[in-house]
Image (cartoon, rainbow, N blue to C red):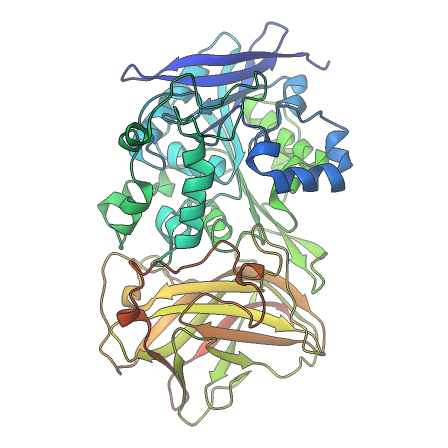
Length: 566
């Protein structure tokens, strides 16, 4: 039986300190006890996707009619589940404005212990309401996925299952600092456009309530000075903590404390923000019942597709309703392999990550020849360039047979700098026989390369307990400045990728000391919002010197590739 939907709007949820947050409860009209799917965040529970992210709404309405066939989407809020496709199946969808955002008054302090305490209290409230069966599941994208790791590690009562869709757990390495480098482009844009515009009391907001048409930021009107006093300065806080210190540690969850059933979904298009940390979150949790899917395509659209919603529902039916529906037979890991034309060549099912059938393969850099090849060069060589330049590109010969990759990539490279620091930007690329670059549509860029990796060389220290042959894990807890001219062996984690390259194609690696771009093209075609240009974090005196790459003569400089077939 399909349940008719009721909406309880702007419901008050009282926190442990007496503060009141506002929530929308979408529930079946028929009295009963139902499992709860919950989101908690600052984007605005009442801001329609067409306001918050117009391009995403345009893509959905013009290209994906099958989504609109199953819902009017009139309650569709960016990166959260559509209640119209859940309530008829016997679920309550609960959306909460976090403190200081939307309709919830108070001090705005996102990604912080204060927010996690509120999240904990809201889950406890949801678990004991008259319409709740006592089980709460978390479902959402990006911010509404990343927060799942943080709160699950605190083990609130009633929390029963997680479904983080493209959401990293690592607030330092992925969300704010690309392995040590401040992510100024993303952080600045996100803070001003996604968060500040929806701060409670902001009379200048462009957002209106879906239902009432009134200003979405509550009834109060706060002046500029009062708004400023009523929030933490997110950007200044990040800039003032250049290493992974105590401030960061209380914002990164202990994954070993998470034992709940979890379905984690990552997307190859999530370079520089969520891809790596979603997979790493899945790897790190202690859950025995956990599944990982790595997809291609527009991450927000795939979240809403009818067949995908059906998959999500099978997972929650099993763990929130207790239905024996055979979910446990789902492949533990499922990975889509991309073809060179940005389509899906095939889908692999596996028992673990990295994929057990991986053949870890080294291809070596030769600085003298600017080449990538199967054997290390015998003679020493080096290549120098200004760090703030197009850098140095290494390339294979045309492939003699198809090359299929799926998994993480590592770069080992001896480097020196004429200054006391250096940021490395490593971009894995591919080209067809005519020299045309193979590119992919990512979440923020129309021409994303195969993959990318970053490292602040003064934070090159590895954590030996967590590093593996295929993943260098940097502790980022100290800064060790460089001696100009001295050679340092560093390992750079290039983010996981998948691609099937036909015979005759070439694989290439571009190494720079600045963000990747293509000469003559707008930067945002390849890097998107993920630029690293704040001079407070990258003063030219330290990061604008000459970079030298060293290979051969016993120095190991190589890419470690996750080859499936070659």
